[in-house]
Length: 157
Ligand SMILES: Cc1cc2nc3c(=O)[nH]c(=O)nc-3n(C[C@H](O)[C@H](O)[C@H](O)COP(=O)(O)O)c2cc1C
Image 1 (cartoon, helix red, strand yellow):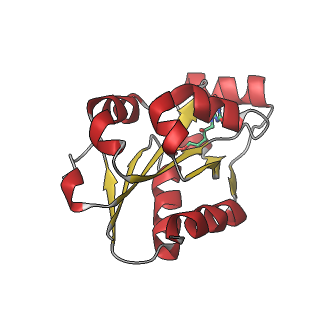
Image 2 (image 1 turned 90 degrees about the vertical axis):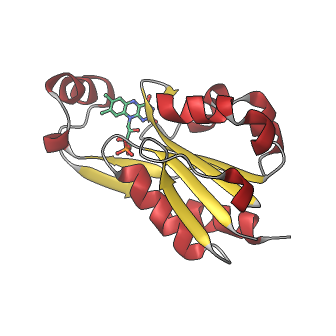
């Protein structure tokens, strides 16, 4: 059964997580940035949707993708993930953002961590990260153990 990983990203961290996840999945995997292409969902038995979090929200192209394809997505073996730097609230943020009907049937749901690259951010984003998260330097905190656990669930029968 082929797998689609459809993701939305601003600065690339979610793309990197999608790539690492794909390496751990059984069978053929196609990775797609949904801002750039519209995948043909009929080709895939498994669909994994990923998005980074910004101020408590998933990316708008990911939200639109879920809403537009809701009925088809409900027929798939589904996984949902986020990338974010607020580990304390990540599951609440995930549940609050993906449609409930998808969240209820998803076989795997997790936050894979994330990172900050200050030179890619605009002035306001830098200020927000300094002020609200208290970080003023680049960092990467991708949670390999969570990606492994997620892949195991998606690979199981
Ligand atoms: C302005 C700003 C707001 C953010 N808001 C959140 C948030 O609400 N929750 C969270 O978990 N992470 C938050 N983050 C962290 C990002 O989700 C994290 O940097 C992620 O790795 C970005 O992934 P991307 O490069 O794929 O867009 C925020 C980052 C920035 C710069």
